[in-house]
Image (cartoon, rainbow, N blue to C red; front, side, top):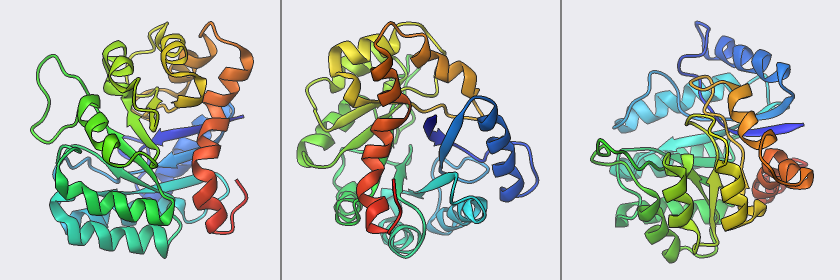
Length: 260
């Protein structure tokens, strides 16, 4: 079975968060996905206010409400609204069902204002997912690259951080994070090109690669194929498709009394 670290409600069919979650689960069932991680509501907001963060997280909480056996949530926060973000972490992670933190494109991750968020994440054993991209057309002003994440990782050597999309330009992204042992390459959200997972395993080891799809913007099947089509041992495919994510989530799940 498969655990997927990267799913969204936006663009999923359905009028409500609950209907959108059912849409995701129906398609996940077709390809053997056992657990989903969901973050961010709809529509996507690149630079949300504190109030908008709360509304987006409310949508995810509603989506999770009847599916705690199948789905986990990460709380969407922004360093530009630090007080609101820390309050959301308390509400959704410490006192709620969520198990991780999602940082997107409002502020580059190497800047000092992300530090309180990461400190709280470490205290709660929450998994951190940071979107990264190398864009040929230029990043958004607040959009992080894997190099920004490397700078951040040096300040938090004991905190495991998911490098979202591995920068999109995965060859460059894999090389960028290679020396940072606490950074983990995520496979989702770009074309299902053969060789990405092979290179990540060769340069980082299979223990530092986690499968994600970015569904429904990307199909589950095409993103799983990056892993199943890789020329790597079957044991490594199992690690990438499930075991590595389960191990990442285990500390916070156990702290909440949930068996990983």
